[in-house]
Image 1: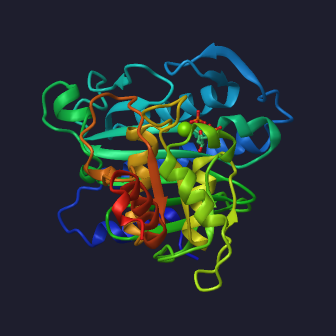
Image 2: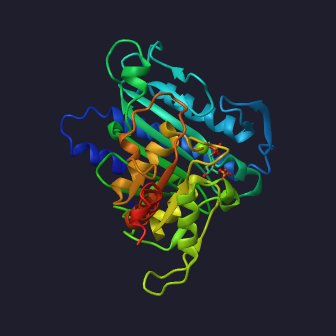
Length: 338
Ligand code: AHM
Ligand code: MG
């Protein structure tokens, strides 16, 4: 069985001029993931459940594990010395490490959602971590325009960790997607899902249907389409929504399906964050052969305007995403409705 560490070293050998910095950065993330996994697993025993008593920059109540995961990932990146800036869901401005002695020449910027799906922590349902890695724009100080607000297509790597019935780390560096399962007996992530591919079509749709009346008409129509019986397209489809983006997209990556968080009356620009939720997941799903759009525009092409920007997302099996896009187009051009 190949460990994550061995796999990263082998891949680095494919690039004779690589200096190993990205490999070390991925290794640091892997180490922090194991520490977070340890705490997530014993959360109920170790007084780590429940609120931390603060709200974050988004006005959301922070859970104790949100804060723990944030601290672990940031300190692993800080100690590792390969990351010059961390943009985290939990910090309004991010953490500039470029003044630290060990990180001043670091080449990479990391955007991270340290604990995604935190509403599921207290009820023992899967949560995750999502990360995205960019190359620093220049050698001088870090600026929003040059370094931080890069389009998703400029990511050099992205991944997620799912703390589920088993813990997995799935990542891409733009050369396909590989998944590693944590073997608790040896404390290592081992390659279990090489070269992951998302089925081109599927039967699972994942959306919070409790928001139905707040959805745009195109999404209401798509949901009805999913529910109507049709033998040829194997409908009705199956509705599955965990409420942890990582877990919902991970399942759809393996089984085939579409995950949708559209613009709603409560979140007119969408709810999920571009920089550390949508871009990394879009990079992974595209690398696995799927598609990710806002319903009309490719996620990875969007020019970010702020660190905590929200956008609508439709992501998953290519044919299913294209069907949702068709429903959006139909709303703009009703003549398509034949
Ligand atoms: P979080 O990062 O604060 O946990 O929020 C993101 C989560 C996603 O994992 C999930 O898909 C979505 O929010 C669930 O939102 P809702 O409860 O509105 O369906
Ligand atoms: Mg999140």
